[in-house]
Length: 264
Image (cartoon, rainbow, N blue to C red; front, side):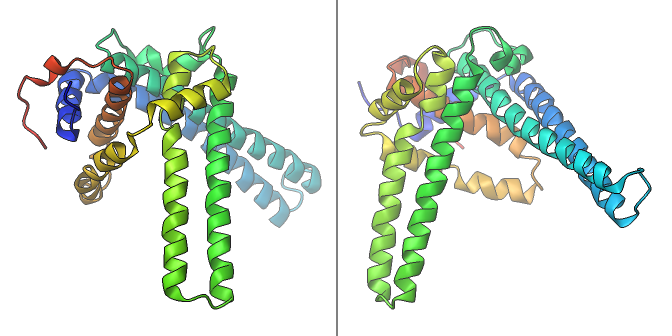
């Protein structure tokens, strides 16, 4: 079977998103509002701590008020991060249902709160891969800074940087399907999902890279519209990513790309 191209994934994504943008935007609104509420409470608590330090006695014991506000701030900041990750699982579930042409609703955003969804494993997977990626990038940047300090030739530094970043993306693009697999099979082990993602991404990294590049013009449109276009672009990009995942698993049928839809 002929490999699907970027335009094919986009064509199918637009077909399957028809009539479902309201559901996707509604789900995003619920998740965004919940996270924002935690951040607002954290900010107000932090502001209260600062106020109690600057104006002792306004809340009684200034030290106690500051300590209490600091604890509340920390708890709600952690809560915001946890909610952000858990709602991410819901967004993946919604996108997977749309990609598979299954019944979907705003309730999918609460997938991680359902029995059997294993939210802790999802959070651990996300945090572990994110932390490893951040640590590796910091290591690369530190090594390059040392090279500059020791006076390495610019050509050598550039060569090292290119090789390091190619290695970085080779490794971490291999985990691109990790969270989709976690959402699909919540009971799977953390390292099992990572291994399957790496296997599915074999010989597909360049294709995913080219698909990602094809969205660059739309990023500029988001800036031009002051971010409004992201309401349309974000679900579109995510569904293309989901379709790429489904194609890697052999779930997409070639005939579904026949219907002509204008290519953007």
